[in-house]
Length: 409
Image (cartoon, rainbow, N blue to C red):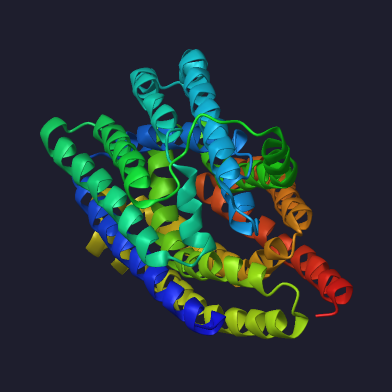
């Protein structure tokens, strides 16, 4: 089967997962929004920030290297597993040791017990068999669908049921724990080879050496993607943070999901045809044009009809979402349009370029978010991320043009 057919098949499976998981997520959000208050969503949002930051901070690019590696042997899998085990243990200890400090930083005493419980999540996830990277590497997206959707469904089911019973946001943490346990079990059931306690210095150096820019990229992405949440949570509290994050979910996820679906499938395909300039340039153009129309259409819908969307889906408790939703809809559209270029750069080994793009975006955000929030409040955070993304556009095109010239694309 040619790469075009494999790409289409992969898009169908990744798309099926994204659509089905986001549909379930959408229903879960609507149900929970009518049980929990914005402040409760904000508390869980803080937990999510902590988990995301540690996941990024300790990311060494294992999956990236395993997908790109041509000769993926057992030594790679074994070494990657030991790295993941250590990473999970380290992250859990960091959460426990920093829980009191995080509680004081956000002035939210109730998050302490949430953090101690959430420390189990990275410890459990460290056990996942890294051989699941083969699903993406070999374009076996049906297997990836079966694994990820099962995990997501259990996470959502546990969270909803426990929320009905407890009326507490801690149920969302228990959902993450249940999903993590299932992911470990399925990774050992569906993926081969099974990892062993075996360490290879050469493979370790290869993973760390090639993954260092992925680590830097992840950190830059976190601070750009979550910096606004950190500032809103710190300055305005858990209530406004819950409103802001809800607006983010409504406006950003439907638009950027499209770009993420395409990126996940095209990255391994681009990697396979990277030595064929004609094919990869043609594939890139088709991808960019394919994303543009639906991304702009979705962005317009959220920009033009935010009040109707919020009233129908969330109810009157969430009317504060409306002004933020419109600004973030524009932001999400631009991010989706930039996605194919960043995926192409990564597939061609330009991790440093993508990292620098995100780093500069974070710098722009850091310069603007405090003055804009001081003047406009919560919507100022949305203005800051939008302006930072607009300033990112010429930098992306600069690196893209340089790459085209170097690779003679």
